Image (cartoon, rainbow, N blue to C red):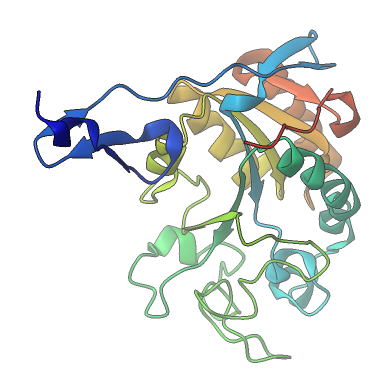
Length: 262
């Protein structure tokens, strides 16, 4: 083996998924990471997760869903329930970051020309086709509904974001369809997903269910999620997550310790 074989450089988007390469050698052995077990007081039973292979997904905490000048409020929906997760997220996300758990902001951001939106999606909240739907300008602000680069698609100002956080755009109820989310998670070597955001019975649940189908462990962080739907929709979402998809736990039920400096 030549001397350059030992002059290896890391090659990969993240340390867990990287190779080490030189001009005449490639080391495909991924770096080993020690497990970071964390007990969680979950339902239907207590669990232990590995924080070293966990990510937090925050779904759709955007102006159009959570702001008084956003899309849902403009069509008469009470958005106050959608704002309930803000305080819990602001308390919980710093704990996760301190433990080096990746934070992924999953949000609607459709193409301005709407070429990635089907008629079925354009029909949502605009059943007559004459109202304000995806991609249309809001009457009050002129911002285009859930469109990439618009105020409507931005995360609400009250939620603190860090430069190290990851942002993933979606244009379906599930964040896994036609997005890079699965590729990003695999590069991070993530096996367990924490879910939060709105609406718990719609985009949160469908993304969580698809994660379960793909083989990820799934946990809904109950006080960090909410819905503007009737209460029976919330209860049904909780029932189905606990019954078939995974677990439900409050943010205060996680025993998280700050990760040591690398």
